[in-house]
Image: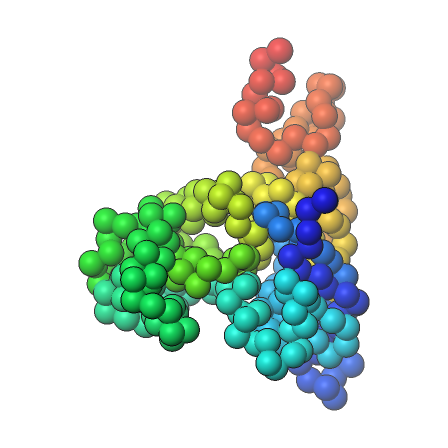
Length: 275
């Protein structure tokens, strides 16, 4: 049985204790080791707040979150939790601290007191994992947005994190940069990393093992991309779109073609139409 790397138990959170509105309202969720989970929702749905709660940037108002069985409210476990579940944010420029790529990636392990020889190995392994080894001597400001995000991901990998939480990491990138980041996440997933992707791009969410839809601080849908995105009308009630190919397949079905309701891939639709 696959272990739960993260356990979220009836968590509630509000930013203002005097305000009755919860940003996260009674969420329970388990994230399994090696799982790629996409969490989506419109602005204000609570998805980014949930990410910060997992990383212990915020603490629950009610309920509990455990990362590798460590309680995120336990101050003595704070740095262990953040090492186990590293976070990558939206703006890549805000995450880079050094003037040379390899020095930036070494920053975290150096602060942990890791031996120099081990730091060298971790930096090289992390750069190779994200396909950025040849840029190790470059200044970060000379890189594209997508490359900067890959460096930010490498910095988390150098900490030996089991889980990588990404809070809309492609929101400020062009299509090429988005593609680079998603290719990197797929490779990390194949190598056993646990990925939690906060996104509003449906074409990114369909690449995950699991999709969680949030609205007004609660989980509304949870399942595989095929299971979730077949609920087109319900998803639109939450102010979200569905993958264009899914909506196209629905419209073709209305015109009399016999098509499944869970198509999420262009190739799948093309193959069905060609038959």
